Image 1 (cartoon, rainbow, N blue to C red):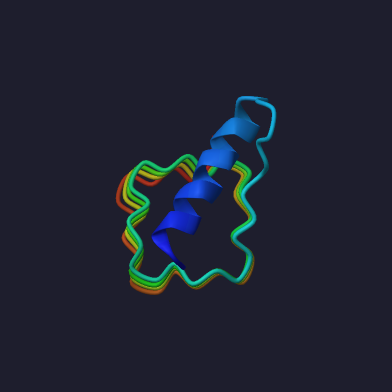
Image 2 (cartoon, one colour):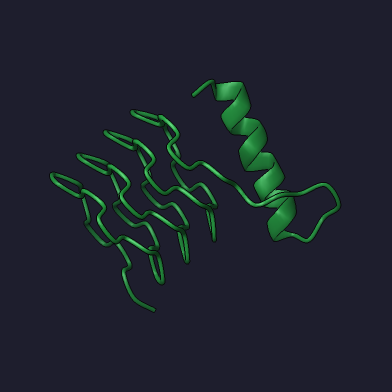
Amino acid sequence: MNKQILDNILKLHAMFLNSEKGGEKANLTGANLSGVDLTKANLYWANLSKANLYWANLSGAYLLGANLTKADLTKADLSGANLSGANLSGASLSGASLINTILTE
C-alpha cells in the first residue's frame, strides 16, 4: 500500500476516534502492509481482517478491539502492543514478537 494513502487512512481514523467531522473508521481489509512501520499507531477498532502484516512493525501500537481476523502477522513486531479485545481468529502469528504485548485488559 502506498504510504500517502496509508497516512491518509490513519489521519481519517484519528479524526473518527476523536469524533471529528469527516473522520472515518480505518478499513484496511486485505491491505498489503508487509514491512510497514506502524510503531505506536492508533488502530483502535480498525478493520485489518485478511491484511498482510508480514514483517510489519506494530511495536507499541494500540489495536484494542481491532479486527485482525485471518490477518498474516507472521514475523510482525507486536512488542508492547495493546491487543485487548482484538479479534485474532484465524490470524497467523508464526514468528511474531509478542514481548510485553497486552492481550487482555
